[in-house]
Image (cartoon, rainbow, N blue to C red):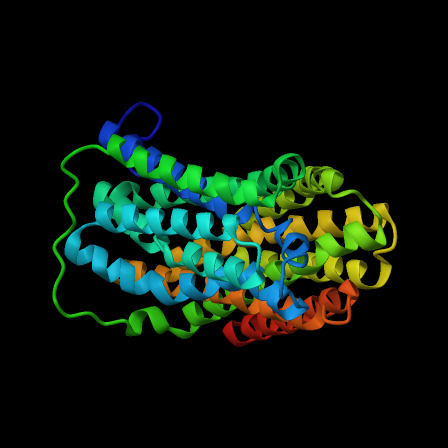
Length: 403
């Protein structure tokens, strides 16, 4: 009784997955939060490809302080994500988000008007002190039903990933035409614009009831801590790479700073030939194996930069491989964590994950500055390749243990 609408066919139809549509207020809230997150990330990451060259020209600059200027935001981001998220539970999401954006704008202004390396480092620390990623995530959870929450988080993740790519393209172009101080000024502008967008949030978003007792042990499960360490390594490698990369392009390849953006644009576009197959493979075979492939791409890119970064073509190929692996990992690691974390501790798990990510950026700035001390970018890339090799070994060992 299955070919003519009988109960067998009806039972089969009932087993088909039903996709729950988002409500208009949910779509509106997600759109606003995504735009706020994207604007803030563009203002932060647009500096990454150009800041080390600019910082090196400032009074009191040393290679280590240059690296600190690039990665300093990660220290305050890592330290304040969880406290500000907890504060938002008590006084509300929007006040914390607005305060964080104002602090970000103040830090951008201080760095933009500073002509010393210490002033820029102070500004970068304040930029990071506007640590609102966890609070934005909590706001999405407040504004959406459980049935559409994973989809909502995915939309924000895609937006943030797109903002990183946009920042890699926009930052060098803008700085080449208007200067790095003006790029800090752009950070002030996007922070204030993001704060204004909060006025478009739907009214009546109420935080869920929370018990006074909190248990973070579920966020510290071994499989989650492994992903926390992975994102730490990813952002340490990324930040260290961008401490050294502008010096390679300017000094070794003799590329004018005004043309650096062309290298980044081309490499990111070509990298999609690697990122898209990784995404498709991941959907069919699982993230464990695909994450390993992505790490290897990052490692090969760093090795090429270290040992063969003497021509525009080899550097271009290295960056295409690096971005192919990086962009997949940037999206794949939080997606993996969100599926492994317990429902009632997902917020805490994402908070620890975000703190690990930004702490990695801070460590990467120090690594880049330390190994750039003799003026040879190849040393930085080689250390990054070693970190990626350690990561490959850890990923392989973790899969062996799980099997």
